[in-house]
Length: 105
Image (cartoon, rainbow, N blue to C red; front, side):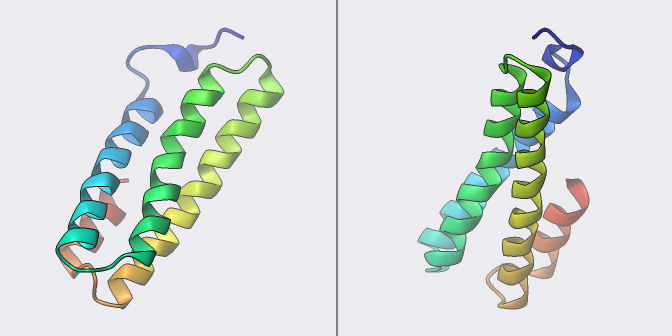
């Protein structure tokens, strides 16, 4: 399936990739410097899965598969925000870090 979603300057594709990088960098800080192992791994999994599912959707063979992969990305984004809120409320990330993640994406 060819779609406009495959264009090089696709904002969803680019933002999801940038978000994955931010999540990986946050994971490294949480894991190595703040000694938080469990929640950070959950965030790493869901936060990087958003872009991975978008990429799979771009490579899909049908419209139905494309929609399904984007729906999975949407669910992973909601899950990621849950972990971000939880990390914030338990003081593993501060207000500035929380707002940066919340407002940018």
